[in-house]
Image (cartoon, rainbow, N blue to C red; front, side):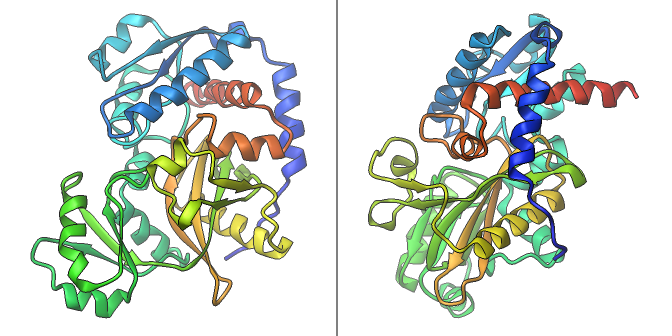
Length: 337
């Protein structure tokens, strides 16, 4: 993996400088997409309302639009100039809404159609990362006819079973014996036709937010997550005050840098843009980081991690939101080039 310099301070300074020069009126009428139809609707509403409040605080003409309650094609009737996507999961983070916005000619926050579609599919994501030589746990795609003993022989125990195209730990099971595999598969298959099993890495749970695009992309500070009973489930992610978040992580500087470099390489390999968040496990035995998944529409709730990392780099929540939206101005310039 090629070495990448991480300029945390310069990113924060550049954000502040760009916002000082930004005329919010140039952003026009802004649509904030929130809610949607996925299993993460509740979280999306929390994220979207936070974004909406922040943009209005900054003087932006921002309006909420819930494609879970209205037909998404009605976005065209709203005469928006650009879109902030605060949707999570299917129909918001999988390339579908991005494709609609492309057809409507509306600039939007986050990754494009292909990167979004690839990133939400954990199997496709792994295939790309493996082809790029990036470390990620061993895996298998499960079916109703899978040989459970063979899966255990390949991946070892414990292992993780989850839907391939869901987020927020929905449908995830930590399997400790082959006997538990059928029920774990059924749970995941109830949410997605594609189910993945992967080797469970025992160690520190980390996440690394990323910003920018291509060679100018940068990694923000790494966050260490310490959930109660080592269970970072849906409740502990979004509603528990017992989950601890360490930023700085308390890990050695060279470990943080290795995680940032791995996350940045993963982000670039998928072709992501604007922002994202790579989830990583740090193996206790070997000290090696392993990529779990890439989020292309990260949460923006009171418990969310990108705002936490941005704050560590000197950028407050409202400024982060405004900066992310301002990146759509660059998309418009690219489209007109």
